[in-house]
Image (cartoon, rainbow, N blue to C red; front, side, top):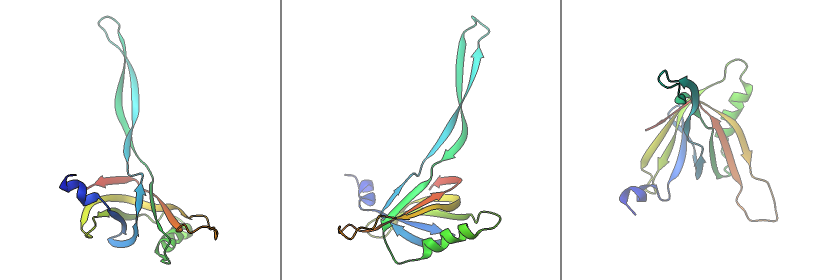
Length: 147
């Protein structure tokens, strides 16, 4: 294992919104970018060969899903309620997913533009098990910058 790998072993994540830590999480998925593929057909003048060219189209960013053990904090609920109560424009936020190592040092930052929570959920309640309740937050965004 390299020193670089050790930085990320046992890492945890925080959601930062408008410069403030909102919550810490133990799992994060969906931080990706892909381009739509645009195709156009060509007929070469010499020999009449037909080809299809592919070029990058519009960028698409997937939703980000964060998970953590249930907490009594209402911060996520309050942010979700702000979106629910919005009458006109979506109350976009600027923020980041910040990755910390086991010594609480920041090792990576994924900046998100125009983000908002689109789903909040809590795991099923079952008194017959000793499983930890899990909170899940799904966020939409329009741009990700991997810093």
